[in-house]
Length: 390
Image (cartoon, rainbow, N blue to C red; front, side, top):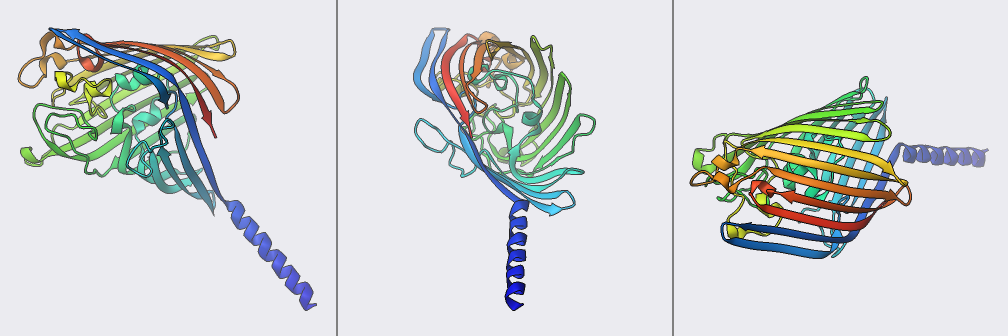
C-alpha cells in the first residue's frame, strides 16, 4: 500500500513539474544575412572632387544579423510575464554590432490578452512599430528621409516604459516614455552616439526624456500607422534648459490590390531629425569636407515615400521613391548654406525570392541625390544577398 501511495505521489509530482514547464517557454531565434554589395558616393561641387567607393561582403542588408532570446510565463487568468534580449552582430567578422551586450532590444514586462502589454527597458519607438509600409533598404530605406524611423539610435529608446493596447476592431495604440540617458553630442553636432543631429556650435551633454506615441490599423487589404516622437535635449552651456526638443510625426498606409500593393507615407521633422547622428557620415566618410552640418534648432523638413510592390515569378518586386525637402539652406553654422543644400531624392529597386519559409535571396539597386541635404552629393549601390531566419 505504501509503495502504491509513493508511486502515485511521484507520478503526481512529475505531472505537476511537466505542467509547470508547459506554462513557461523560452525561444532562441535569429537572422543571418550576408551577400555582396557595391557602393559609390561622389561629391563634385565648388572645386571639391571627392569619391568614396567600397565593394565586398555586405552584412545585414535586408535584415540586420542578430540572435536573441524571448520567453513568457503563464501567470494565470490570461496574464503572462514576458522578456526579450536581442544582440546584433556582423556576420563578416563575427563581432558584435555594438559594445552593448543586448543593444537591439532588452526588456521585460507583463502581457495580457485583455489589457495589452507593459514592458520596460530598451525598446523600439512607436515610430518604428507603426511604419508599416514596404520600403527599401540601405540607401533606399525610408529612414534616409524620415526622422525616428530607424537611423542610428533614434529607433530605440533606453530606460523606457511602453504600453501597447490589445487590438480593438483592428486598432492598436502605443504609448512610450523614456526617462533619458547619457548619450552625448559633440560641439559640431554629429557624434556617432548622438540621437539628434544638430549643430550651431551648441554642446548637448545629455539626451533628455523621450515621448513616443503610435496608432495602428489593420483590416483586410488596408494597413495604416501614425506616430509622434519628441526627444528632449539638454545642454550645459544653455543653463540646462530644454534646447528646442526635436519632434517627428508621420502617417503611412498601404492598400493591397493583389496585382500590386501601393504604399504611401508623409511626415515632418522639427528642430532636428531624431536618429540622425552623423548626417553626411551616415552615408560616406566626407567629414574632411565639412559637409552636411546643416541641422539647427530651427530645422524643418517634409518627408515623402511612395512604394509599389508586386508578385513576380514567385517572388516580390519592389520599386520605391523617397523625398525630403528642408530649410537647411538657411541653417548652416555661421550663415546660410544657400545653394549648398538640396532636397533628398532616393530611387530604389529590389527583388526578393523565397527559397523556403525561412530563407530568401534578394537583389537590389539604389540611386540617391543630395544625400543628407548636401547638394550634389550622389550615391549608387547594388548587391545580392541571402537572408535566413531561425
